[in-house]
Length: 458
Image 1 (tube, rainbow, N blue to C red):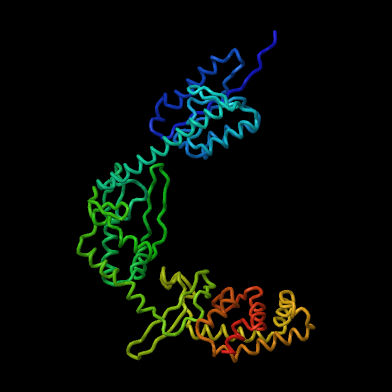
Image 2 (tube, rainbow, N blue to C red):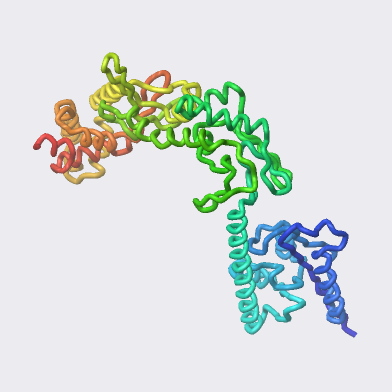
């Protein structure tokens, strides 16, 4: 009598939520027990349940990023499984696309998939058709559940309920509700008062840092610690504009009365927002640059890597305006955040132009540019090396004479074509030229279409 071949069956179970998993006999155990009973009914055919458990508790069927599923796929890849047994098809996946990927893995390793409540065989065309129909309904059910959750979330917010996430500074979460944290609430009130007094986010940041105050530290429902980071101007702005401090709940731009207590009184909220409303115009007045920002968008801070933006200040008593390029990190976090901080615009622009003029006279740059020019232009390639370098030298000599004739926008465009960026460091200014940028300008000038030749003709 021929022995019945042993067919190794791996049981996979899944539950979307963690609710009830702490019970002695939970949903995962019930699924496994039903699958084991089915496998036992096929004992005559050689079916044997493998002892390894593949249980995913608290994982959605809409993703393949599940630890037990990954272990199951690894066992399949290693040739340790013949049949995958589940209670229902959506325990393995609720996504048609993801399930198609799983079926491809099964087929590649001659593994059969069996759902004990939905009988079909994935190795046949009819089984695949049935599978696709069932998966389509499973995916539809998942999308309907998602819509229900979104509707429930919106309805809960309209009732003023807290719906999770990082609690706002000034509040803690107790029994899924926001409760006032007395110490943090005092700081929030101090932030509003300091902003009304100074009208500056940065001044508020300086005061908070001087008091060693950091952003909110909190613990997730899963028990993970989230440490508060250093406070910056954007964090202060979020506090100043968060209507939760008025005792309101906001959903998609609309405010509703919240279940929690307010921290900020309406008068000081309105005072702060009158300042915020005029702040953009005030900033424009303070930073309006009467000196043309020639290097706008090109300057970077060599200390922290941030961009440097044009700015200016005016001494009213003298009627004098001073222009600078200021490190954005210093603007956001205060002057102490960056060693460079700012650079006088006139000095920086003069240094950049001087370095460009000096570079144009360098023999190695002329030779390199001539070489690039020959590779890009047929007329230049036909010239002798000396003639080609003379052409380059003559075009570069025109730079000094033509620069002053260019409008500001033309000067900016010319520098943008030449320079990748300008690095301002404590030990000086460094130019980073664009590869072939100079060659391209000379080719355009030689053919009468470039900035230099076009401007001279004008």
